[in-house]
Image 1 (cartoon, helix red, strand yellow):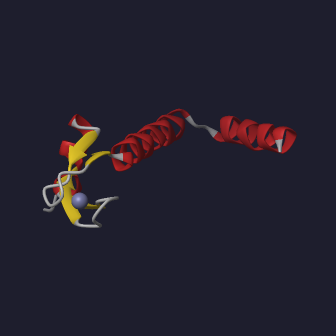
Image 2 (image 1 turned 180 degrees about the horizontal axis):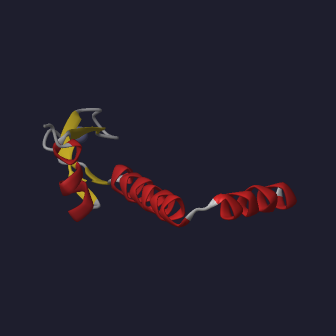
Length: 83
Ligand SMILES: [Zn+2]
């Protein structure tokens, strides 16, 4: 069984466009990384993106876990008012 968190993510160097593969785990721990080809130091936007995605997924899971029909109806009506 493949674990998706172990799959490397390719990041293109903003300076030399070399593709650097990093794992999600690595991106969690490091927001900055250095290109092994040109030595250019970059801030990993992917790390922020991965965090955002996981925060959203967590929020969705929490909504799903706590949702009954009245809660989801409330969400729809709130959307209608604000939008
Ligand atoms: Zn580079």
